[in-house]
Image (spheres, rainbow, N blue to C red):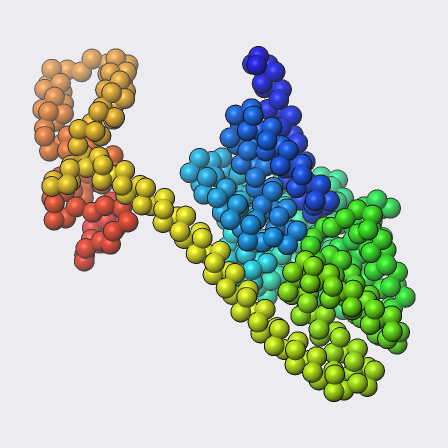
Length: 450
């Protein structure tokens, strides 16, 4: 392949991946197929970075379709690769995806930690739209941890940024998530104001099913049953026309519609909707939505004055909600364990590499390390010496005596492994420390000054 053709192909791949990463909440199934196709193209072109970017999109989409464990394993693998090979943009995006995964697993603190790390990796070269996405994820994580004021502030920053960019899709997404925050914290008036902004701003082709559900729930909370039903039925039509934004979207819409119907006294219609919701939850393994549907069914039975069945359903709801919490804790634990195992394997590989290049008795670098490091170091020294002015005879003698010193050579060799020449020269066998081992008593004070 000609260089110009290869460069053009790489640019096309990058642009296609940019589009997949930008529209991560729309047409999930189609974007999953697109990510897999781009991964194959990138592998054929030998573009490792593009392969990892495509795989990260795949992990994100699998998570959104309800396959959280599969998505987590793939995202963790990409996160580790990005940490070892870069670039920072891929590492930041892996933090973004892992934040969403941890949130779905119920580990809100880890979700917040990854969201903060994604923001920390932004610099002057980070595109404004990407920064806005990270701000939005941070706001969502803050909302999940109960930091509502901080979350509102980040939502505001993200909306301003997307407004300046003219990105209506992401701006609507910000308003949607802010509306959810308001009604989940009981601020019904603020939720309705934000929901109506979302409704007014949405063009005919801009509103998606998830946003329609949010508007419907805010209107329901404010007592506007007619407006709530209008929004939810529109959301169901959008879902049938365009597919899933997330695996839970149809169940969320059906559950909101059932609550609207119960509030309006249309109990038979509400029963049909709840039956459909339970079937969707069963097909898609939506444990959280299944629990919520049981809660609403208990309310429906109580409205029918069937108190015995209502009580039994409420007990089932309570049992399932406890089981759900246990499941979320176990899922979060497994995800964290997978992260630990991957990091531990990397530390072990580093330790074995050091052992292979270190003399077991003295702790000094062995012949293998000398053979690997000396050619490059010698070339660097010759280049620097040729570029420097000729020293005086006195300074030459002094410099040669220093370079020829066995202690000085050993000390500088130890710097290959990060040992400081200011705190120790040649480490003895008893004091030798390898990365990954605990320090002996008192070593913290010595190392802290280096």
